[in-house]
Image 1 (cartoon, one colour):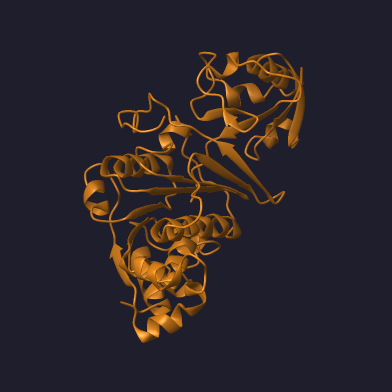
Image 2: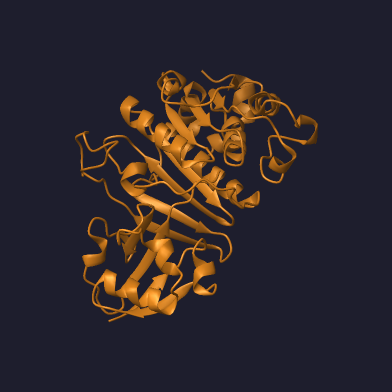
Length: 247
Length: 90
């Protein structure tokens, strides 16, 4: 049940056709993991907190560095040297005190990943490397948790929503690893991609609109162009190939 | 067949910053070979030493994933190819 204060806080989005008080209540009850508190995790979690997603678990093992501040907008000058998840939790709690923010300072690995996502409704991929993205994808598939992929490079970004067993997963689309490298990026790129990821989360929780499933959205900020690529489930996919469902 | 190949920004340094390259061929493989003929340094970006596409390269025909056997897929006049290169930043 929404409180009087919540009705006022979320008044403008409750007005949106398809959300209403019922949708707002769904957001309040929702539990979302944001894996990564950096460039993508910052905008994604800010807009999820602002929208009233009830529980947000921020996972990151890094500390804030000066070179993060051009894009990781949850972290400010005063936070340099601090744990990213503590810095993130402080800002998100100040933005919306009615949202429960869980700060988890851990490195996501094969051993802890199932525990870290257990009981959550959605996982947002806000990582900065492919191996962890693949771990998250597999955990999402194994635990039947929808997974919102996002990635950036320079002024380019990608987004895709994965519903385990029903739509193409990240491994159906990306079949390899690129060599680890320091990647170029400016804050506006993860801002765009993180906001699209948050939009997908909100739509899924409320149950409105058409999700970005079986489609990879490619954002080209340099030419201000969005390209949609049609992707399909790979029956031999090493992560989701064993699941039944449309192929 | 004349085909346009959309080059992702990641690979544009290897095509003299050209975003769209016009190529000829009746299969994806022939089109990619023609692309490499125009921009030889693209070869190492697209192909592994065993002659196969790198596992992190995807080919899309008119916006649809051409996997598997991408290089053997036929091409028709006016088709558009898109090269998808994995990115992992966040």
